Image (spheres, rainbow, N blue to C red):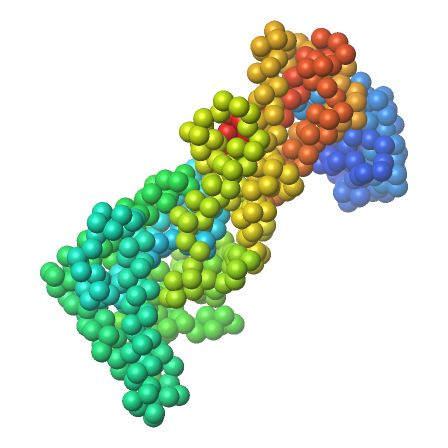
Length: 597
């Protein structure tokens, strides 16, 4: 919420008038609705339980505020009080001190937490794709947002580097690779391994088709049921057993190919600006959890089924197998063990998993199991569930090689951004500078558009639309920042100086000036609400509104060409304040700003 001196004084006044009104009550100020006169609004319906009749409280509020030194006018519309602030008071509480606004965006010390966020979680049989890009963007932006409001955040990656799908790429490399390497092929290692994963599935499909043709009795069985009936499937299953047995040759190939993929992942993460505090490997954690299942059996949290499988009876959620009848683990077994390992390693007060919505039930069950095992901290486990992201060209299928590759998407975004910069740039801008701008704008446009929608939304991502310099896009906000930087540079070149604590704020009475200041006032609230909801889309919406407010101010209130030097100084200070908020907000979303566009 925005913080205004007159609203704090109003709270003190009401506390003195009403016994039930606590002295530390924070009265939320809201933007005055469009079409009404005023800068901010107080909703007195919120105080009905504390003060009685809302209309009577509104009348008292109007009487108090009309006599307040900061208030030009106050008017009650039913139980809503619309307040017009004097320019000097409005600016003092907003754009005159952005440092205070930034500090107000921090949580009180007692509310800050130690939080662990796990995201990305790719497999080492293929490069990352558009789905991973949404996951990575959500995870890194949430981590940054939670840090921005004062939390201690640890960023974790758990890489799936073992299993049958990894063996598929390995088998294909053995059979079709002919000793090729990323260096000899001239491509990233994760792309090379991914090519063999696609090649494997092509070969498997051909073998299954031939098998069905030779064995009409198998025609009704699906591909999964026929997997072990094929020579390729049987060989892959054997490779997995050999890996688990520690076969030196298999392990050597696995280490080599995984190394190629990790090198490729590192380049992808670097381009996105991701730096994990720790990476867990499933090859090191997949046996975890069995001891916990045994302890849970003794406590009665789990029970054995007649076939010998161990299940967790979770009431309305359903029953969940946690050990197969042969004693082998299922995925949730190792998830239980890994959750305990992460807690032991970092002692977080809260843990967040960024995982697609197809795993909603899995996480409901995992969290319930951890609670039933008696871990008090399990009350603070959270699944940031997100929907699928598609392109206008349709859905993605990894096995068929029709995924939208992350690196290819990055390159497309950057090339489009660079082309746009070339259209806007004047003479004398080098290709290197244009490429640098294109990198910041293209990657920023991608992240901004992926964060624009609530994570749970299944969204359509249009690269061309996201890169436009006009509209609800990242480049639109970046352009506002670069415009402000340009204004400040030109002011310095012309010797026009300003100091926010010395300008005459009473001169800033234009509607666009006041609208910009009011919008700036809500930056702390935007930060805290986005962090509390674990949803960056609210901050994206705020930055778009602030950029729009600045552009309206820029159109109607000339800065460098202001009628007087005094007014120019005021407007320079306002532009600088808006720019610092916009850039801080973009930085919180892990988005940069180029020097020019």
